Image (cartoon, one colour):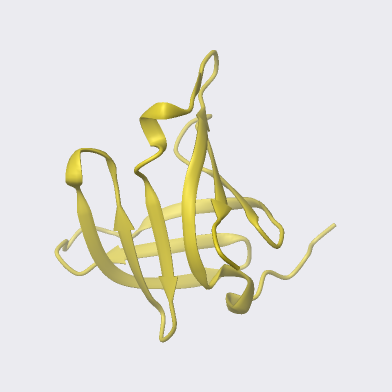
Length: 105
């Protein structure tokens, strides 16, 4: 079906729990990855090795567009495969699938 994703569903702090590629599933490697969706279309992304960025996000159908404040490049486009109360599954470039879980409500 074509379920509408609402920004309300996305709000909050999502911690990566696994990254699946064609042949491998990574767990420990992504434990420091956090996507924090904030009100007023702001996001903060914390990645591996202390990487952090802030920016603006847009929700377009089932796509999440992340525009970093520090980058003039085109936004990063992520496909939301599934969102439930505490699980967010995102398809990145290629066949990489990143699963997030929401901690603390």
